[in-house]
Length: 331
Image (tube, rainbow, N blue to C red; front, side, top):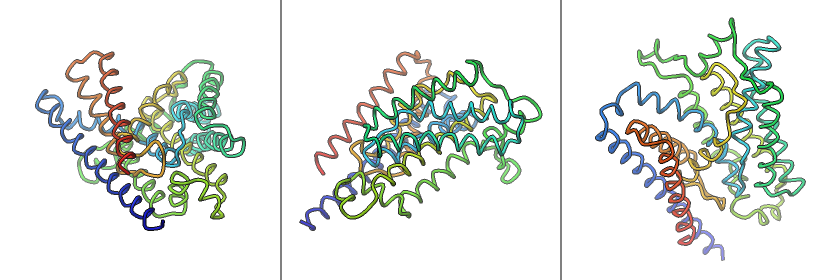
């Protein structure tokens, strides 16, 4: 029995690596196709624009990876991102506190929302789909109520410094190349998330919950505690995404956020994380997020109508999910 389980695990690992390779190959093909189709695609400023647009969705996707690996889902990451940005705006603009307090408050807001979702799933035994759907509605409503349905703009003296979080560039004076800070933050968080998922007890229990929750419980692991921890981590990542978004727009937009969760989940699935849980990598998620951004940017450059862009991206998501189904059948 042990040998059979080991063989199954090896097959899952091999299929996961294959999925990552296919995703990376797809990314390269997309870049080549759009480069040959338009002279405007493979330009430095456009590539930086792609990476900048990847940062917010990418950070959301990094957090979503943790929940999806457990076999759960978090539909609230988009609106939690918005709620976190609104609270950051309240702290900095309305309460007139320093920017570090706003950043801490935004991340804490996201983590608190994740904590509540985790408690609803772990303690109240509400299915993740329903629990996070409710959180999505709650945070969407709170964002509108607290902001008075109006954007919160970051005024001087905070505006210039706050915008540098996303749009500034520490690399300009280091290496002479201007890479937006939001991009560096995204890749830095990807490294942190990768270490969490592969080198810590959080990652170990994360995969254990997704592979066989009952067996994990019987082995003495406090399953409920670790579910709460994982949803809290996802919420914290959404909080960071909210700060990046607010910094990029130099305002907290309370009506923004709906739909971002679908793009984040799509990026995770395209990157090879299984919706059934127990399998996934941060590297795959990064590749998936880049695919989503490259596809959207390329279609826009080719003047493909917005409605057809949505259709094409939807077909890509269906293809990725179907590939996951086929992979699980073989495993």
